[in-house]
Length: 330
Ligand SMILES: Cc1cc2nc3c(=O)[nH]c(=O)nc-3n(C[C@H](O)[C@H](O)[C@H](O)COP(=O)(O)OP(=O)(O)OC[C@H]3O[C@@H](n4cnc5c(N)ncnc54)[C@H](O)[C@@H]3O)c2cc1C
Ligand code: SF4
Image 1 (cartoon, rainbow, N blue to C red):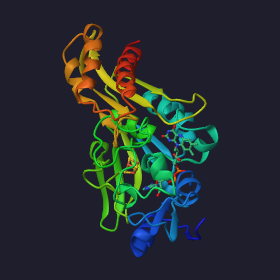
Image 2 (cartoon, rainbow, N blue to C red):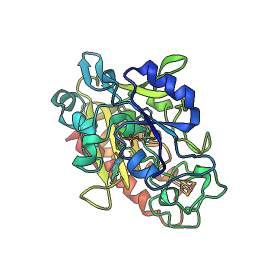
Image 3 (spheres, protein in one colour):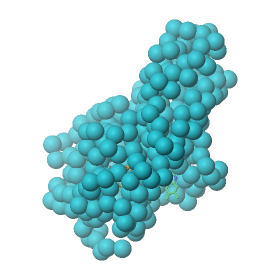
């Protein structure tokens, strides 16, 4: 592994100062399960993706870890571990979807060190991207190997130039829960909804979110759900013990009797960003869920553009959407 300087700031201001000084040569470190144990260990680098000279550890900043819940919602610090989220009873009562999504991430060992901020901001898992020998667009090269290569796990919606799927399960859940991100940088703090946090390859193929090199995710705010809102999480994976999503579905919605009032259906594993399936939501609005769910779920086919080896994901997505909504109703 390439050597690096380790910085252990104790305040957000100090962390931002170090990031500003090093620019693209520094990276934020949280649990390190992706950055150190993946990207750096495996020498994942390219012209547009240099390996860092400095790591700025956020776990030494006490204010960034913890869960606060009040009547407005839950605020979760960026270095709160996935295990902390899974084990929070209060969080589990109000936002079972988030706990289930966090629980479906990786293994207990990784969840013990992996943080919410690290999970949301982890780099993609495309096997070409992770391989040293493939200098693809996402690393600053001039080709996407998945177009003619093995693309069975790649995007079926919104791929263009690069066909990664966003790897984060918690990101999928947070988008469904209409959560917001608080970001810190040299200009101070700003809050943006997760609707606008993730960016696809058309906007910038070298990154997956709006964070600039000198910015960090401080905390996540999840608004309290509407009284009686239904929520559910489902994830299909190849390997049951632990694996990334082939397709994941997070659904949060309100009903009146059996009628869909309002809500969000978000898919993981299908697109370079967590994908809000408005095309399905629109088919359900104001209708009896039980009688329209099959047809509504099939609407996902109208936006899917599968690659040579992943058309099966379209069937999986359609069926998982239907099953998740039925599960939420139950
Ligand atoms: C075997 C294995 C299986 C996995 N399975 C799954 C899975 O099923 N589902 C899933 O969602 N994930 C999965 N993961 C990914 C895992 O969840 C992530 O590795 C972990 O959550 C990252 O957290 P971390 O704190 O260790 O991040 P780090 O490795 O420290 O950081 C990850 C990235 O996020 C950036 N970062 C970290 N914190 C911040 C912050 N606050 N602000 C801005 N940028 C930040 C870092 O710079 C880095 O680029 C798996 C990983 C492994 C190794
Ligand atoms: S899908 Fe993206 S990350 Fe994978 S090879 Fe193509 S450009 Fe690279």
